[in-house]
Image 1 (cartoon, rainbow, N blue to C red):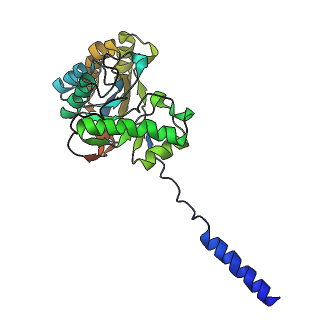
Image 2: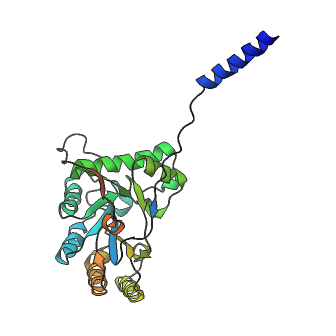
Length: 256
């Protein structure tokens, strides 16, 4: 009887040792909704690389300011001229922003609501645009913005596994909600009058009035209020990229 008890104990120990190991908890991404470096303002632009991108870059450059561009790769809801981030025009605009010292970051591949997707689908939306940005610029982004600002714990975990932080905003110019250029200007004016310590502003480069009316006003108004206009990475005291290398030569893999 003692032998049978001993045998059962050994069998239980053997079974426990051969069981699957406990997985380590996933590294959940930090979500930033405001800057942390005092008196900085980060102007961010979603949904490009659209045809107005270079105009925005030129306005920022002329003012000694920096911006952050959250790029998507294939977003037909905006009826892009080029449609795909790999097409010559779109890729050249991404490179233009990057070469001028502005931050480029992920807004996912096809602008889907990530909270409606599975773990594998979320990763697919993330890695494909990351790969495109790395091929075009040589840099691998450290930040991403989920479409519509929507995220859940699965999205946080996927971003964390990919070594990225999530960035949303604490001020919305409301351009994507149909606000007129004057309304967006009024919102920026009220923001500057309220004088918060930092600003993380949402804009959309796909909107003509934003690119050609609102951005110039926002730059002037915020600088006159004493803010330094910097990238998201700088306003958080972080690195904008996980790695920086050389762009890849254009080949058959450059397609959507």
